[in-house]
Length: 209
Image (cartoon, rainbow, N blue to C red; front, side, top):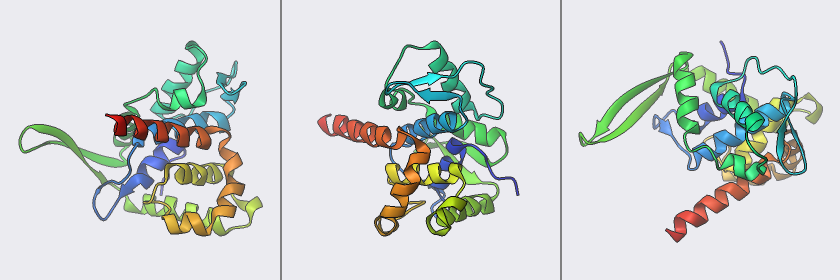
């Protein structure tokens, strides 16, 4: 069984509700953009430069998913922005990750129209056991010895918690394992905090509208 290796791909699959056959989270674009930042950070392709991400010279970008690769290039060429600003900058992150997973044969995407007018896409998993394996890695990160948790899994849990992704961690689990999650959070650097701020800002903007 071939499990995705990058955080945006993992989070997209964990956001999918297999029973309802749909993605079950708000603010998915923000969450995936944050995941791409953490992916670049943990691979040493970017660093925290005074509250801003900065590209590391000469770092190889092999093996990145399309979203993370595009974000790395934007950081290299763009002006300095805060972590929160980068998270809120990409409004098509979910589509980029979805199309990458579809191209890799991990999901099936069926384009259709609701009421014959509104375009939408139906997503189904080609290998449901891949999502089950990802969910198991989240559970393991909450119970295994802290030193045995892979940094990528620790970062995954931190992002899920910041996104309040109930399809991967219920609010009861987040409350029960609060201390453990806080110990795992440093693996994601400054991104979870910035993600919370970006989500709150988007919700406030939506409420104001």
